[in-house]
Image (cartoon, rainbow, N blue to C red; front, side, top):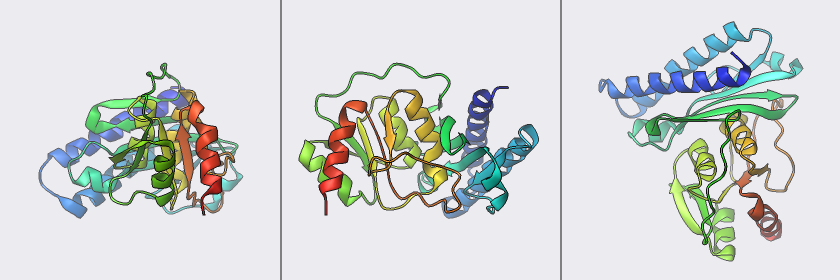
Length: 243
């Protein structure tokens, strides 16, 4: 398999495993989330270590190792992005499998198992037509104040949604035009979505316009902007002027 084929296959199979764990009906709530995280993580990490033994690995559910910092190629995975949504039986959660090369999100697959979809960086499709009134995806529980402020200034409709991957893929799938996030994330939250979004021709950056750089010693990446290119300059300008 190519790297892109491997990423997509892993996202698909991990998603199937997660659905089977949830559909068993034997566990629920936080226990279900924990079981899903551990099951998917074990599968992803074992496969990557066997299939790509020379590459580095960073997973939300694995103890981090400084060995990855010396690697040019590092797989960055989030076994369940949106554990709460997964545990609640919703569809707005995701599986992230990405390969960062020299810090850039080059290859990615984002599985949306609840929708039966895997979006991948090696198979981009044309973007659907944009809505006349822009739509911004935001957290369904704690919308970022910056996103709310930007939405008010550009007349955007707020679309509450669960995981970071689901929100980013909503822009890819033409269900929204802008995903602006502030307030805390980690590399595994955005690497795969960023790789897919970039392949589809979307703008990806930090909220100050600087590039998204991965495989850092500190994996905290508190903000990002994924949006249609025509909105990038305006959103970045507005954010730069907010207090």
